[in-house]
Image (cartoon, rainbow, N blue to C red; front, side):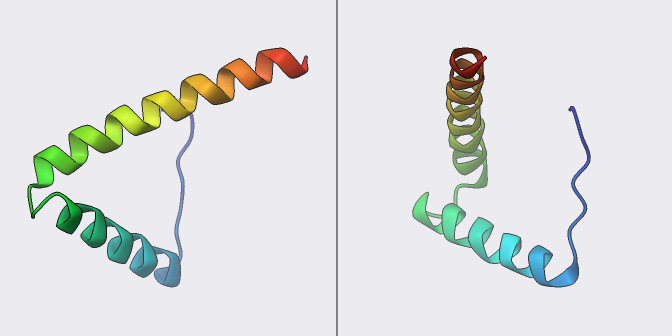
Amino acid sequence: MDRIVRLDARQEAELQRQANKFVAIHNGDVMKALKEMIVLNGELLERLEKNGRKSK
């Protein structure tokens, strides 16, 4: 991990709400939701890194 993100109580509550929605989309299967989130984050990171190289 490159950095630590600190959330206030409002942000933490919103993050929990979104996480609950994401798990619900996967019929309550937390592991399936986690795996998909890891894949999605990896794809986003690749795109951001690619775009960062183009702009330099």
